[in-house]
Image (cartoon, rainbow, N blue to C red; front, side, top):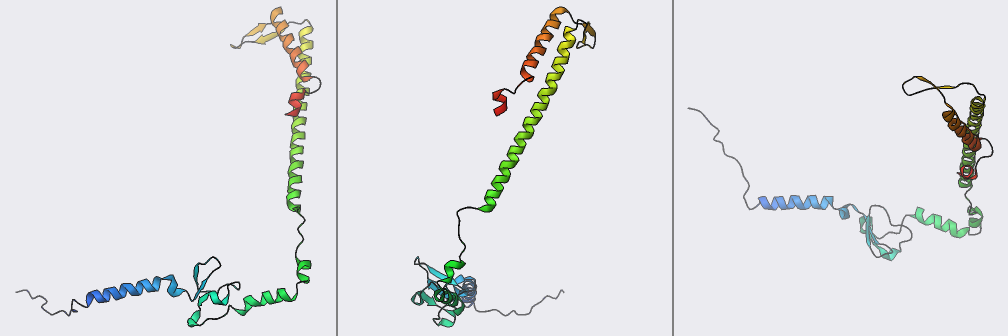
Length: 196
């Protein structure tokens, strides 16, 4: 025959169990509540209640402090009041010590000047690059035109890689193209290209 546990268990009366649960829940809620942790309570300038573990600012009047640590109404910390007293004692020295605002931000102006200089240098470099490209193109076009007008036989390579001799019609078209390039690249830069 198998032996089992036949011991008796101890139980609480059913009427006390819900009471213990309610007490435990209430304790947890109170411990998590910010108002329990706050030692100071006051009404701020907008009429709202403020709960904090630090004293209210010096600007809050004594009559607006509702609760302080230990339930005693105390004035704000003396360290907060001391700077106000020092400021009242030396009003003549305060304006001299205050920084003068000139309405100009030196660092901002320096950065702006540097950005303008960099932009001007970039534009100048771009203009030099374009001028150099135009000069090279002009020189190539003049050389090609002089070769076209020399009367020598010219050959080109077609798409198949075969060599073809230029006829008079093709030479005339190529000469016109070289004249257009010379007009565009030899001489002053057009106004529309210079302003871009």
